[in-house]
Every structure is written in C-alpha cells, then in structure tokens.
Image 1: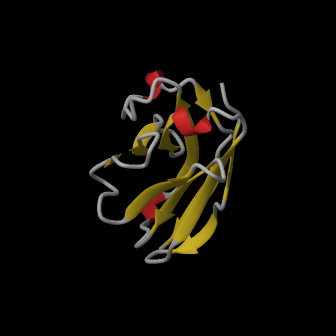
Image 2: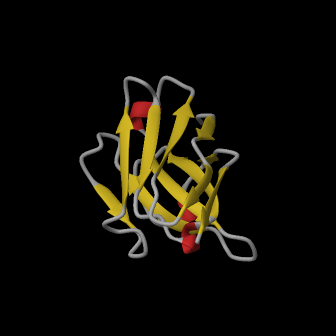
Image 3: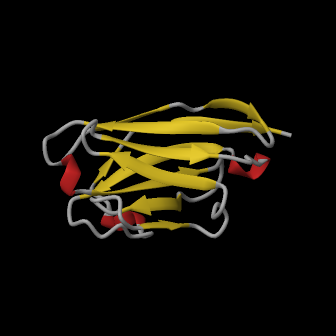
Length: 124
C-alpha cells in the first residue's frame, strides 16, 4: 500500500479555481491507478476523477467534466486535481485514493489506500 496526503483545499468564491495535490509515499506509486473522490456533508462519498498509472487515460464524473482535470507526475509521486469554474455544489472534503491493480475505476470499493482528505468550500 501507499500512504497518501492531500493538500490544497480552502475557501474560494464561485467561479474560482483550486488545485489539489496528493503526495504518495512508496516506490510503487507509478504502478497505481489514482482517483479523487469527494464527500459533502450528509452525503455519500462520490467519484470525481481517475487516472491510469501512466496518465494516458482519465475519466470524470459528469458533474465535473470540462471543469476539473486530473493529472499525475510519477517522478514526484504526486497526483493533482485542477478545479476550475467552481460551484457551491463542489463544496466537500476531497479524498485521493490509490488502486494497486490499476483499474482507474469510479467505484470507491476498488481503491485500497486513502488519504485523510482536504476540505474545499465554495462560497456563492
């Protein structure tokens, strides 16, 4: 397993941007698919975006498509989530997750390592 630490959350006005980072420990990071999920108060954790080990393929939830971009830098053991045109409904705790089998799924149960989360608040 890898250990994951998210950063970059904060308070932003609607229409603004944030970039989240997720730093991973472990030499096998480059073989993992990575995902971002989020959980709003009173709601279940939901899929946001995922990326394959090489970065060659990505997938997004419909609610963020065209606004969010997932990327990774395997040399830095880091995955990013660039969030543009933020909306109040994007307010949530954002978690990164790692899948050792490289599936880049939108199903949270397939991810075996999770970070502690970083909070994003979008004001209207």
